[in-house]
Amino acid sequence: MALSRLAIRRVLCSNRIQSYSPITASQSRQSSSSSYDTTFANLAIGSHTRVIFQGFTGRQATKDATQSLEYGTNIVGGVTPGKSGDHLGLPLFPTVRDAKEHLQPDATAVYVAAHQAVDAIEEAIAAEIPLIVAVAEHIPTVDLLRLASILRSQSKSRLVGPNSPGMISAIGKCRIGFHPIPFFQPGNVGIIHKSGTLGYETVASLTRAGLGQSLAIGMGGDPLPGTNFVDGLKFLTQHEETKGIILVGEIGGSAENEAADWIADYSKNSNSK
Image (cartoon, rainbow, N blue to C red; front, side, top):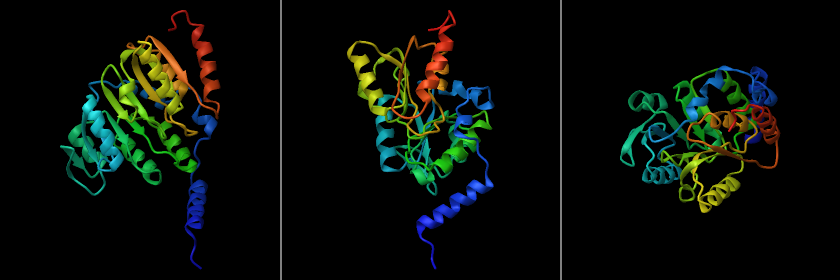
């Protein structure tokens, strides 16, 4: 009797879980020192950042890349498996490794559907792309667990997302993802947000009040983000262009509590922002 697609998926997931022992969710959120912690500096995007897109020729990637190019983002090319040539007047390669060799990117925007997104992220990690921004949502938890373990075992690539609107530097005119560009103006307020909509509203309110932004990081709504609130806070407190920080949470999970504990410890330092 033929197996249904759901049954096949359950068998595959079961086999992967039995043959693989990923770290737990609580272990992935620990702030103890690890090789992955050395990748915080990769979050420093700006006019210097050379960006590629994975899934470059897709409709949404094309739309967002076009807007980001108009904004001033230094997009240098992209990747679509099985294709080569050019797209939007920029070089197109079939693999991330090819793009790395020819373009030397600092960051990649992963615009790949959920069922293929982790493979695309792993390809970027294998190519040692310094910053990986993943926008896909509904990635299976078993895949997120595997990805979290991979990230913690290396020190070259930093992930933002998945299920994230990405990052934007209003000072450096660099957008990796789909933050609404008209809301932003250059300034000195850094933002890390879990809720996309509340993050956008926060930025719009700051801009209306005449307060610009230095950097916005969309943490993403998945249970195992590559960059969480504490990671973002550690980076922004050391970011020279950031003088104040806003954290925008969302119902669900313990990320906000962990951030509050970190802020309490940090505030005991007389040199804190």
